[in-house]
Length: 133
Image (cartoon, rainbow, N blue to C red; front, side, top):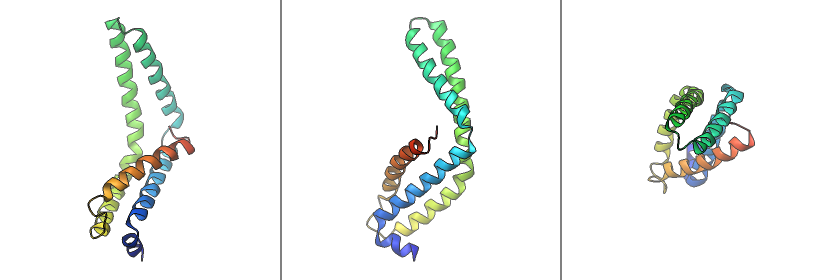
């Protein structure tokens, strides 16, 4: 039944699937990351970017700022990747299933682009609405 609906309405169904996956990923990020720490790190990165502009002529100061920026970026990356690791396997299986369903539809060669486009925009909106860093 679900496969038949997806085949009958391929563009609509891929957008819906993409939005639902984005919602799940956003909720997992919100509830399984330390949002307060992530916000602190992002704010610090902005401060350091301003300092870089102020001290662009001082190589030693720039190196010090750059080192701190790299450390902050690595911590941000660590926090944001942890929830994704838990969802990686289900997403891989989901993509295999989706590819099989859409293989005989009018979007057989473009379903991934539909998915990425819908996911990108829905993720941006969901992150703002749900206040996810």
